[in-house]
Figure 1 (cartoon, rainbow, N blue to C red):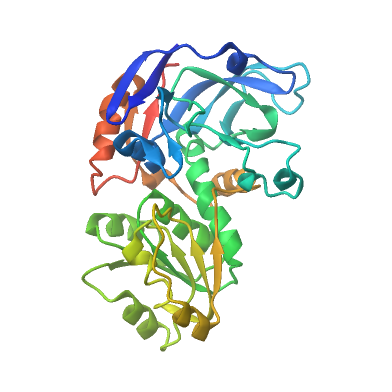
Figure 2: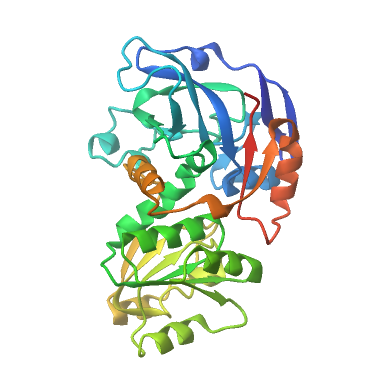
Length: 349
């Protein structure tokens, strides 16, 4: 089958790629899915430009893509909740069902999890895939394939908002106006925040952020003092919650500056190296610090919010490509155009 293959660092090709027979075998509790829409994630681009993320190194050709939606075309003998023709989105990480982490309900931190497009596991920028029914979710009738392919990144924001333990009326700050930063801002508002400040270097991304809700306030990093702005607007108190979604060591070193006493910091953005951490600033605020790794138990919540209109991700989808143009799509994504948030690839139907 044709697939978008990362041959090695900075070398992509769209070619016929043989999938191992075991991976294509339909088990009794599996479904076979015809892919419709796949989002281009920052991790996909990072594998393309760097050939690795932390300990995960691309050592042999690997299919990219993990943010996806599609249609069920075959079901296993013991599948009960899905049928042929159902439109679905898929959670890309499959844990060991017998692991301690999974049994504790923390399957996202199972060391044995197999996650699409994370070496050595192939992604799904290809015509079809086989996936467990348990991690495949039927779409509400009013949720499009494009919106459904946004559930995976949205799940990160919802998981982060859940970790923050938002209370109605809280004030939040999000560092970074990329896709994850913006879905986190939307998740914070849906969770009850009264106002969310979003900080980024790119003015265009801040314009997009502010267009999502009148409760989102853009603050341009490098030009405006974020901590000063937040404290001025809160009578010197500060923000109740800060989400670090930039992945920037410089930004991460400032997470406590806008934070109110007793506030919470949620670390989302991945850091390739150890970062500066101001213990004193954390202590005098008695700050709570949470870390997230992907997400768990939130896909149904995301779909429910998309269906009800509590969260609208459509403004974040800024460009679409045909499958035949996948290599070109990644070249554009790697150039990080300031006016783009989420790029998606549509497969032939």
